Image (cartoon, rainbow, N blue to C red; front, side, top):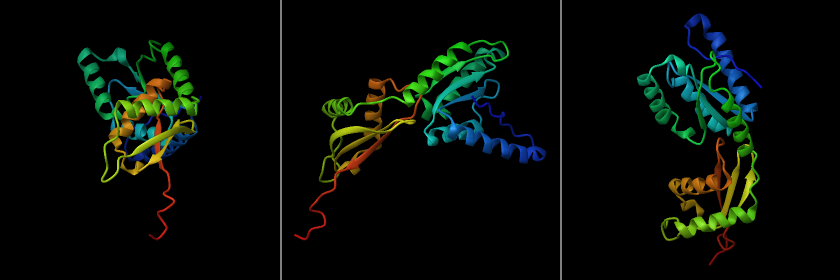
Length: 216
């Protein structure tokens, strides 16, 4: 369990210490299985919070969000904090969110359950037959749009990694699969395997055309 220093901007005197703290925090994120991102209810989502959240996503780490000092703000400020999380951290909507008071030890217990759940999701095993069936059901429900002369054909899927989970989809003309369709597939895979708290990467792998290099 790694507790990193709180990140604050306190002027030039603290710049060297601040840079060191940021580096140590980024290193801790990269080596972690689950990151607990602690936000301050009295400040909302700061630029630095958003940058750290982005780094968590890029690193593929499972994450739980907690808003501390929830007891110290009124209803209006609480609403502002919730809106700032929805807008500035929309890319972490797969993470569970808790409102806590560390000082009064309120809401701490449920955090452990979410951390365990996020770790389980990050390490989830997804069998190829089940992934392929889910893929085929998704295509039947909503086929990918035609791209140029060809419509992408999604044939089968398998797991390409854990922590974060990676799903590799094989087929033809997959370069034409839109980001929106990838998000659609991600949503269905997430629901089927209960991937709460972890990023999920869906990769497309097009089968090579054996005739592409041959002269006609």
